[in-house]
Amino acid sequence: MGEQKMRASKALYSHGATTERHVRDDYPTPPGFVRPLLEQLQLDPSTSIWDPCAGGGHLIRCLADEGFTELWFDDLHYNDTDFFEVPVEGRSYDWVITNPPYKHAEAFVRKSLLHAPRVAMLLNSAFLESVGRAEGLFAECPPSHIYMCARRMRLVEGNSSAFSHVWVVWDNAYEGSTQFSWVVPTTDIQMPTGQAEGVWE
Image (tube, rainbow, N blue to C red):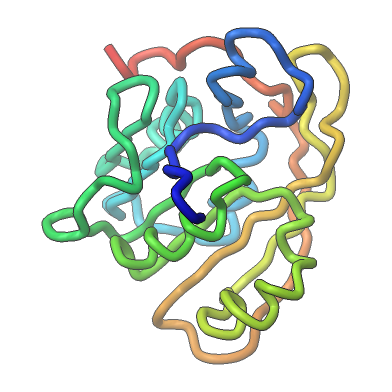
């Protein structure tokens, strides 16, 4: 990264965006993209989960609504916690599940694997096509599962996202080759706005 400081903030969907939300890179995760992942993972409700890039808390709100009780969350803009400055010591969880800023997605993966043995990231599907990652990250830390989202997210403006999404999962206990399958978000695929109720209060 040279001398450029990485900051843990949400990813841009539009490089030409000028609104405050776009400037802050705050793009919430629709519940319809979280539930299909949970159906695949089949986690116990007592599983400890950290979302280090929680934004308005919509992913966390969905996890709480699905019965999870051990939830931790931070965000650069909402509680001034920069993921890349969080020490590994004393911050360990069963899972890191987040929708990271795509510009720094690989760095998010690598650091998340220091905090948890299992990681799930909602990413631009183009993340899979890099030669550098094929020979680097994916060779060094192969994902256990890749879940291609068969429907595109609806943005605040009413348009579909310009790109498709994919959940990429790493599981240190998994043995075998990377498994690929599709998940189909069927409801609640509209990107939320504002803050999720009961998260940051």
